[in-house]
Amino acid sequence: MLELRVPMAQSLKDKRSAIRPILEGGRRRLGVSITEVRHLDAHQRATIAAAAVDREPGGVAATFDALERLVWSRPDVEVVTTARQWMEVEQ
Image 1 (cartoon, rainbow, N blue to C red):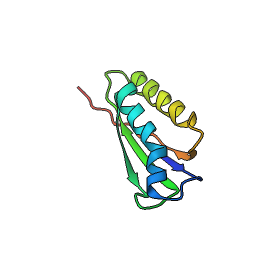
Image 2: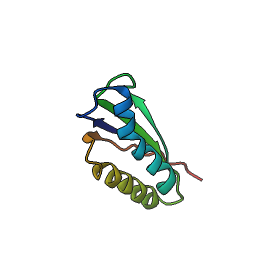
Image 3: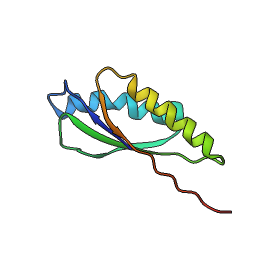
Image 4: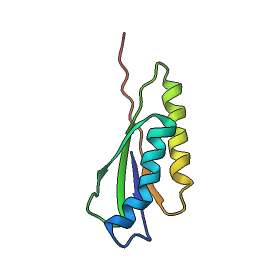
């Protein structure tokens, strides 16, 4: 989960324009399921959550590392907090 600040956004349209490339990049380039989950009506805040599945924990970690790099590379958003949660299934 990534909590973001969009300091230049003056409207929801501005905020969504800033986070759309993150959501689309996560889906297209990284193959993660990703969406905005909190602060839907706030102009300058957004919380996005992503989910990924892999046979190896290292694969998921690498995917989330790439997602975080994608977010940090965006000049129009600031990262407030990040958190990762893992769910393992025994076979």
